Image (cartoon, rainbow, N blue to C red; front, side, top):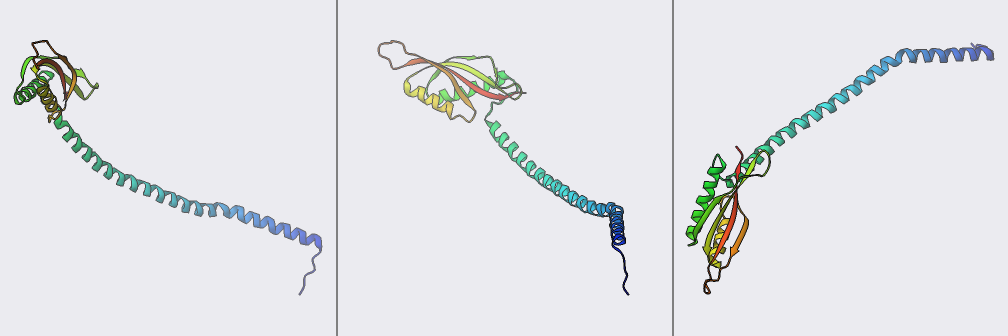
Length: 185
């Protein structure tokens, strides 16, 4: 059984089939897209969940790092002067100086506490103390070495050495400004 269809009808049937096919695709396309979008949405949500997991993991790493840094800060602050006020911190420096010059066989002639200086606006202050001693070169070197190796953070800000002509004496007067550091309260 063979159908004889002329050329015009064949084209018309073919055009109708194409239109029906386009209509079916047009009608089913939203359904296919929703299935595909659900899959891509699921993939996006899985990626977002993985990012959240990484963030949580990094958070615990940051907490460990914070604990470590706090421990280092605490050990670093052990070198700061004790005392709640700059005056008490200056007393701490004077006690250290008395101990240092006592072991160096030098006598402190004068001690003067200078005005505290802000190192920054929030955390630390510098407490300068000026003192003068009469010593020879070896004793001065010993005092400076002990200041530098003190367990507290002390820095020599200024040193002035006056050599007098006292009949060939090897002793001279030194004015030294030392600064210690305290935590701002």
